[in-house]
Amino acid sequence: MSDTTAAPVIDIANLSYAYGRKDAVHDLSLSVAPGRCYGLFGRNGAGKTTTMRCLLNLLRPRGGRVRMFGLDPAQHEVEVKRRIAFVPDAVAFYPWMTVRETLDYVASFRSRWNRDTERDLLKRFRLDESQKTGALSRGQRTQVALIAAICPEPELLLLDEPTSGLDPIVRREFIETVIGAYQDADPANRTIFVSTHLIAEFEGLIDEFTIMDEGRAVLSLEADRARERYQRIRARFAGPAPELALAGALRVRRHERELDVLASSDTARLLDEIRGSSPESCSTESLSLEEVFVAALQ
Image (tube, rainbow, N blue to C red; front, side):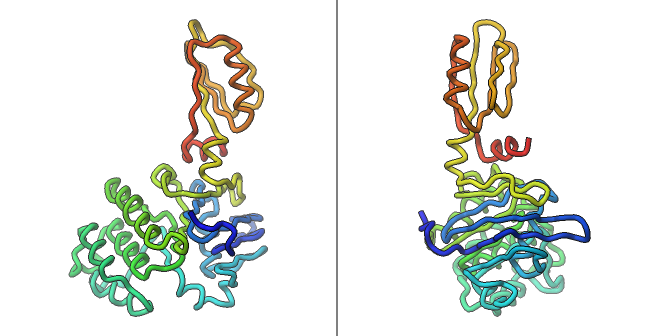
């Protein structure tokens, strides 16, 4: 568990950016503490990649500000970028270089490079070091990019849809083993900021998240708090499920004898109302982060 009172690794305040007249990000604020895995969730076009590009000084904010390690990335670009690694959603390398040459080239710009990690990941991903990167599949290029990002052991790992193009088995191994091992090696000082719409795959790693929609923050919450707050109530009745008002419920579904209710507040009150109709059984369970995401955007 990191010290959430420490100075934030990422601090975004009232960030805005527009492409022409269309707002891509509007008044976005969030803060990422050291040692956290922070998720930026949203549908395609929600503004996640634009936010990443503003952090990387690839785009200049039209309003608000961004800070990384307390520094303005536009004014301290070299100092910031030597402490981070980034994997974009679309990866490209010099196509005439082999995998081996590509990794050596990237390593030449870094002050540190873990060769043991490199060997382990090359073996794990079953990559041929002699193959030209121009002949790699999209998933294989992503694997090379992930190796290049993790081997320098950066303080901050920025991942924009990092599992795009990977098959399900490699995705699971990467998320559970590779990213987990990266943070576990120095949990207080290694931070991950990941944008993704594949929320279920990151369920066990995310400490905190922001859900974006149409460039705006819809919900920012710690993952454990979200699981406490968002609940599903299931009830089964002897006869047809009753028509209950259940004011404040996010969603109410009835199917024959079953009643399924989603709640983000007043769960105890809703339970009392349902139990007042004498169900045969009644139970609650926390929503997954993916279910929270869907509920927040409904």
